[in-house]
Amino acid sequence: MKEYTLKNTSFKIRYHDFPGSETAILFIHGLGCAGSFDYPNVASQPEVSNHRRILIDLLGAGYSDKPRDFTYTIQEHANYLLDFVNELKLDRFILFGHSLGGSVALTLAAMCEEKVSQLILTEANLDSGGGFTTKVIASFEQSEFISTGFAEMIHENKVNSNELWAACFSNWLPQAAYQASKSAVEGQTPSWREILYGLSCPKTFIFGEKNMSDPDANILADHRIRIDKVKDAGHSMAWENPEDLARAIMTSINVVRD
Image (tube, rainbow, N blue to C red; front, top):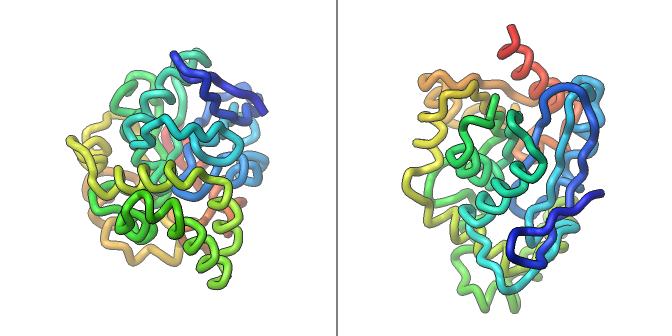
């Protein structure tokens, strides 16, 4: 594991950087998750092993620092990630974002479009209002979520057999989860959907097979965004079927090459 210190701070994000001769893939995880937790099993699949694979833990999550004097909006995450890709001298890279991490990825892509050779999203948050979990978190006052809501949510997910997510979420700073969720619910201008439609690079949106009834499957296809699915999986496809997620990522890359 490596680390990067954010500019003008002592805060460090930590990440895995697996070598490969092909274009780097930068993985940005979703709410309650961590690159170090979600993506090693995806990154180790032979389909993607020729690519450099960079798996970050966002600030406030996983093994990264958890400062309380940081504002954990989606824009602020994208700001330090832009510095990060510049520090790594990633002149061209494939950008992958899952769920709320998809919002971060889209915000980052808008800031360095010339560097993004391809965008791959898995059930990314595209609109204000957020998803189910972000809405629940944002419904609290911040102090209430930190004092009781965070622990309650971890307990409820353990009881409801969502133990992997609960285990990873327990390593988040509650403030980071709250502020990121609030940011997702409030949205931004331009919206993440507008950014997605406006990007000129090749774009793929991947659903878990169990969620293919989502109306966005047709809406996004109408906007010339390639659609794929991960079989036998729902939203947490990196855990549910990492082999087929790696296949879907590589299929997207090969379509562009062809």
